[in-house]
Amino acid sequence: MSRTFTHLNARGEAHMVDVGDKPVSHREALASARVRMAAETLVRLVEGGLPKGDVLATARIAGIQAAKRTAELIPLCHTLPLSSVRIDFDIDPALPGVLVEARCRVEGRTGVEMEALTAASVACLTLYDMCKAVDKGMVVEALQLERKTGGKSGDWQRMQASDASPGQAAESTAAAELGDEEGDAVAPQAASVRVRFFAELRERLQCDSVSVPMTDMDTTTIFALKQALIARDPRFAALDEPRVLCALNRRMSKLDASLSPGDEIAFFPPVTGG
Image (spheres, rainbow, N blue to C red):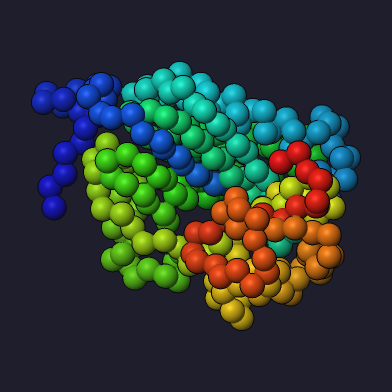
């Protein structure tokens, strides 16, 4: 199928796409990446034993700053008035390393995919810089767009490899590469949910967020989700404490609430600053 590349003019020259006539809408993008490191390095990071200080706090600030300056780094990107940039980290001993997620939001005429991708990549590079004194063999990998909402092309979410045939996976990748300005079809949602931890609970678990495949749960409820997490790692037994509250897609919820792919579940203590 023939496709038009909107960043090239009739003479094949690169130019910034004119989005002046497009309507303003709410747009959001989520990107991820990861830093693979030695197990000993990860232990020192978690315990605060690295020479440059608070690794995750510094990487979070770097990612936010990078998102705000994306147009200075990517030549044909528009300068966007970002309304929110959020960087989350997940310590993964099995990798071993750190999983990074960057979420950007804007009320604008073009999407924020590049801002999210830039934020995730710079956060990873900062993690490398903060840890390189003890581990120069670290690897930054798997930078990718996870999902985007809003704009002419509507919503898009990356399919897990197990959910897509080779043809579907190729079409999903092509749609992501062409981006928001081409209006391509929406790909199906990945069969997983995102779990986030807040305040004191996040500190105890040493984890910001995790992704849980629907297939890991006996039933599609929050209760089954908790049991799947506990089966994955005993530290998640903290979620069974009576005082721990939960929310489904930012609304207070009960344990028998039904879950769907793409849902966001939050666990937090009774008093939290969000």
